[in-house]
Length: 311
Image 1 (cartoon, rainbow, N blue to C red):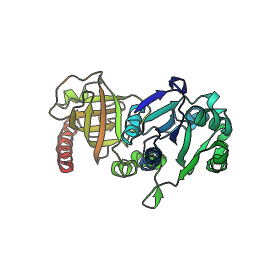
Image 2: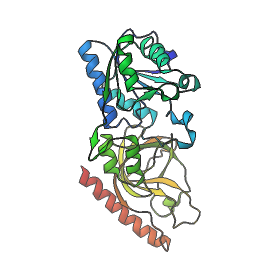
Image 3: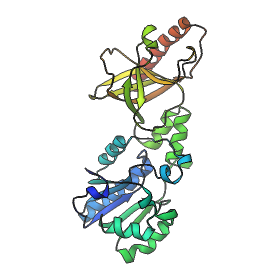
Image 4: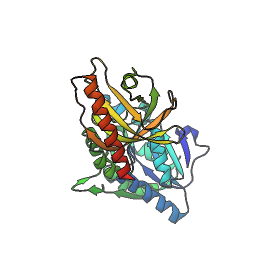
C-alpha cells in the first residue's frame, strides 16, 4: 500500500479510484466494512482502492476541549488499513484551510480533481466541509453532477448498539478488554517507548519495563493485567502489567509498567506494544512492601495462567 502524507506528496492526480473516507480511529469493525466495500468496488471496476483520512482527529482543531483519546497510533491505523487491501492511503493535513472548504470545494478539488473518485464509500453519519455542512444527503444529490456513485453504510451493530470509537473507549476505560476487542475486531495495542523508571520493581524482585506513550492513546482502566508485549524487533513476550498510581509506595506516581516473563535484555529507548489479554484485579494499597511483593507473586502466577489458557 502506498502511503501519501499530504495531498502535495501525490506524484500525480489519480484519474479514477474507489474511495473510502473517514477518520478511522481504531479501524474498528464498522470502519473495516467501509474500507472493504471500497476495495471490492475497486476490484470489480479495475481501479485503485484509496482511503482518505486525516493527520489528526478533526476535534483537535474544531473542539480542542473535547478531544477524545486515540484507539490506534498512526502506524497501527496504517497497518490495519493496509491489511484490508487498500492500494493507497492519503493522509490529509486537517488545518484551518481544509476546515474552511465548502462541501462543494472539498468534493471538487480533493475528491474529484486529486483523487479521481468514481465511487465514494462513507458511513451514514459522515459529515464534511465548513461547519460540517456536507453530509450523505449532499453527496447523494451531487452524484450526477460530479459523476460518482455513493455507498453510505449504516453502522454495524454489535449486541444492541452500533459499533463506534466512543463505545470502544468506554469499554477500555472500565477495563473491558474483551468487549473493546469485539468492537474493534482486532487486538487493542497500547504503544510506546520503554523508559527508565524509579526501579521500584527491581528492588522487589520484579524489574519492569515502563512504557511512555508515543501518542495520546486511551489507556485501559487502572489495575493489573496479563499482557503480551510485542517488542521493537518483533519478539513477543508474556508479562504482567500494572497501570495506576502505585498507592502502596508514597509518591510513586502514575505508571504503565510491565514485568516481562523470563526476559532480561536491555530495551530502554526501544518501542513496545502491549496487548491486554485479561484484567486480573483492581489496583490495591497494601500495608507493607512485603504484602505487595507477595501479591505480585500471585499476580505473576495468575498472568501466566491466563496467557497459557489463551493459547
